[in-house]
Image (cartoon, rainbow, N blue to C red; front, side):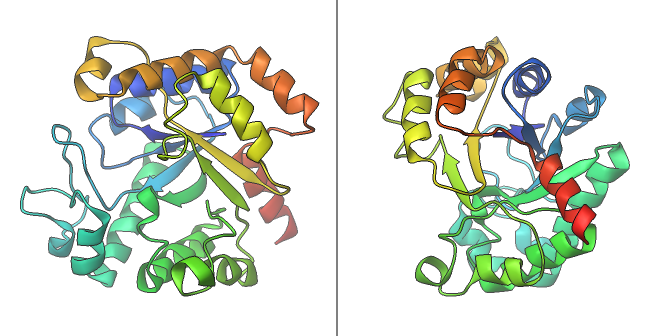
Length: 266
């Protein structure tokens, strides 16, 4: 179970670390260019944290841009483009490669023991010229990737999952994003997890969530702040979820487990 957006705001940092330290959350992902990324490292104590490679910035207030000199990665507002399609249409692959590597290296320099990589909004997965970069970086830094078996020929037009597997990159098999529109109809987080348990297929599945401590900051930033707070409260006191998982024979692991398994066999 992984939480996105670590580094975006103080409330998200606090909620994420709380769930990592005393709850069911097993992994999180840092958005290195985000406004509160330095706050995230100041509170880091060795938790399982990967890098969420950022190429878009859709929030109207916290609108941020690349770490590197990368003109093709800027929109007209001075930050990353809000829409993935704008990134695909205008991003230069070499500038994207430099920026993605810089985000990983900055996280390592700050002191994160990076456990895995994922592309925010799958922007670097859905086009072959950018997936090549993502795969190259996973190999270079010897890190697992968040992927999905469905991300292969029928969906993308090229075999992303198979390419990663052939290169020996350890990946997830399935991906359930609880912020995807199909799950937003469930307002009660317990009800969501009851449905998720039924949907999980054999293999390694990432359940993606977003968490935040209830605060005036979170309420000002996120229209769906109640969802952040309700998931944070449930995941931080997870007995009912664990009972559901145990009943279905689901074992909860983190990306660090995958990283260690991959390095042990390489």
